[in-house]
Image (tube, rainbow, N blue to C red; front, top):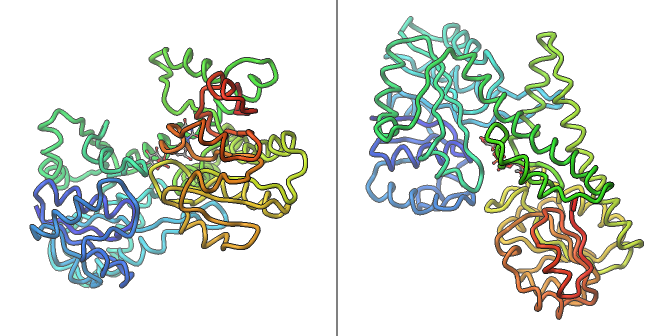
Length: 435
Ligand code: UDX
C-alpha cells in the first residue's frame, strides 16, 4: 500500500521505516531540512538500535522517501499517519499545534478520500478536533475519515515493539477505514497478532491508561523500596515474589531513581489534566507523580549521607540517558542529579555510551564537569561511582578494573544493576535502592 507519515521523530521514523520494510511504499514528511538531508543518506537523526539498517535497506530499494513538502506528502497516498510531536504545555496539556497545522494542510489539499490516522499520543477526543478542522478548512466536501491508532513503542526497542506488538489498537467508526486497516496490518494478523477495533475515543484512552498504569507500577515498587530500606527487606526479591503472580507480572517493577523519558511524565500529566477537565478525580496518579519526582530528591540525600561533603570530590557518573539503549535524555533523572552535584561544587566525570552529546547541550564541558569517551577513564582518581542508567556496558563491567582505577571503592547504584554480595566481595562500599 502507499502510506504517508507526517513527522520523522522517534515514532514517525520507526513507523515509516517498518511499514516500508513490510513492502509498502512510504513517504515521510519532515519540516527540518537538516534532518531530511541525513535521512536521504540513510542516517537516522536518532539513536534507535536497528533503525539505520532498516532505513538504508528501504532507501536502496526505493520503498521510502523523504520530503519537506507537505502537499506532496498529502497527495502521495490515501493513508496519512500523524506522527508529529505533541509536547507537553506548561499547564500539563499536550500542545496540539502541530496536529492542527497538519489538519489544516490536509484540508487545503483534500481532493480525494483520505484516512487520517493519529499515531502520536493525543488527549482523548482529539480526533473530533481533527475532523472539525478539516471540515472547516476543506475547499470541497470530499469524504475522509479520522482514526486513532496509538503507538506502544519503547525507545531502545521500538523496532521490535513495532514488528512484534502485543496488540494493535484501532479506533474508528468507518467501515471503509476498518477495511484499510485490515489490509495494512495483514502482515501482522497473518502472524496471529491481535488487531482490535473500537471507537476513536476508546483507542486514545487505551494509550493513556496503559502508559499511566505502567508509570504507576514503577512508582508503586519505588514506594515499597523506601519501606524495604527501613525494615531491611530486599525490594528486588519483593518484585520477584510479586511478579510470579500472573495478575501482577514482573516487568516494570524495577525499583530505582524513577522514570523519565518523553512519554511517561508527559502522558501522566496529560491524563490527569484530561480527567480534571472532565471533573474526574485522578489523585492516585497525582500521588504516583509525586513519588516519582521525589525519587531524585531522595537519591541526592542518599549521596550526601554517603559522601558527606560533595564539594571538590571527584565523582564519576555512569549513565545520562533516561534508560538504556537510547541517546534520549528528556526528563532523565541524571539532569536533576548532575545539577545538584554540580552546584555542590563536585568535580564531575560523566560517561554515557550514547547520550553524552545531548547532555552537553544542558551541561557544557567545564573544568568541574568533564565528559569521558571511556567508562574506565572516567573512574581515574574518583572518590565515588554513581550509576544512573542500567546500560549493559555497566552491568558487565570489570569490577577488578573499577576498583583498581578509583581512588576510593564506593559505588552508589541508582538502578540496582549489581549483585550486592559480589560487589562487596571485591571490597567495595556498595549502596543501592531498597536492598
Ligand atoms: C514508554 C512505554 O513503555 C511505551 O509503551 C510507550 O509507547 C512510550 O512510553 P519509554 O518511555 O520509551 O516507553 O521507555 P520505558 O521502557 O517504558 O521506560 C520508561 C521509564 O521508566 C524509564 O525512565 C525507565 O528507566 C523507567 N523504568 C522502567 C523504571 O524505573 N523501572 C522499570 O521497571 C521500568
